[in-house]
Length: 358
Ligand SMILES: Nc1nc2c(ncn2[C@@H]2O[C@H](COP(=O)(O)OP(=O)(O)OP(=O)(O)O)[C@@H](O)[C@H]2O)c(=O)[nH]1
Image 1 (cartoon, rainbow, N blue to C red):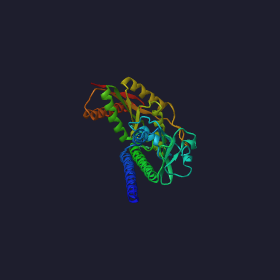
Image 2: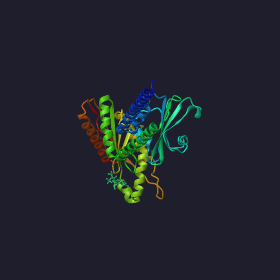
Image 3: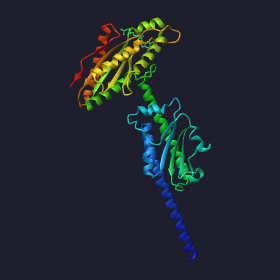
Image 4: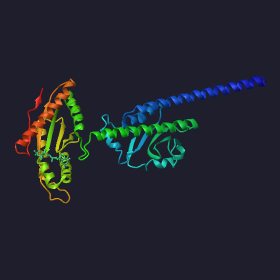
């Protein structure tokens, strides 16, 4: 083979290698691009965690995955995740108050990097992806891979850093959106659901009850002569009394029961899978718990407070979605009527209407 032929072969091989590298890079780029598109489409922290901890490891045959997030006071990630409908536990998701447990791994260099097995006496290498908001570490995504399988070229490091930024931005976006949605259904003073939250819960619970054939009960609870408390002790004391009444009501409910502030000094409770006799018992317990103890607020002589409670129950099979709203209205209307009766009967009473059954 003469020199010219040899040069020609070398040039061809070089070109072939370059094209193969280019194809590999393109394939890699497409993988990242797909993940980024999926991240941007995520609507909740839960979806993001599922994508990163379940879908990605499966797609790339990774040995393990964990996502570590910092839940500083304002973000309430745990609270928001608990509120998510699909709220099942995702393996590998950890939420902390501070970044202490994962920050040291980066040794001050918040970039995509690999901790090799021998460096850390582990059986796998760990790919670390920092999640940053500006310069603040808000989380860390960690993938376990077989030793030596992943090496970071300049190009893949750049892609991974870009991916980390997209993950952090998507997370931030979901947290903000979910937090705003959360605020829109919460009463600022008492921290229970507001009227809007109640309407959402009502429709969902009526639907659930109709489909399962379970009973659903509703309590309407109104503080007696609350205007007098405001007039006698002032609005601030009135506010504290409202908070204490909420605590007392809540102390008599199960975790699955739903308490909301319906308006001013009126509260509504939904009791899923609860028939009339149990609902009456709970209502009576609430009435007693509120009136048995004085309201004690700083710089004010403790004073008595009482509530009147109206109870309504429906037990119905209805499969048509259009019927849910009507059923919800009936339940609220009936509980409100019963409350009116309790007020008319002298207050500090529990009254009920008949059970709607079909
Ligand atoms: N402190 C305080 N008062 C509130 C709040 N929301 C509503 N109120 C007051 O609740 C009082 C309700 O008065 P009324 O509707 O006359 O009812 P009531 O005095 O409880 O009398 P009955 O319900 O008939 O027993 C009003 O004085 C409202 O100003 C609140 O967020 N904080």
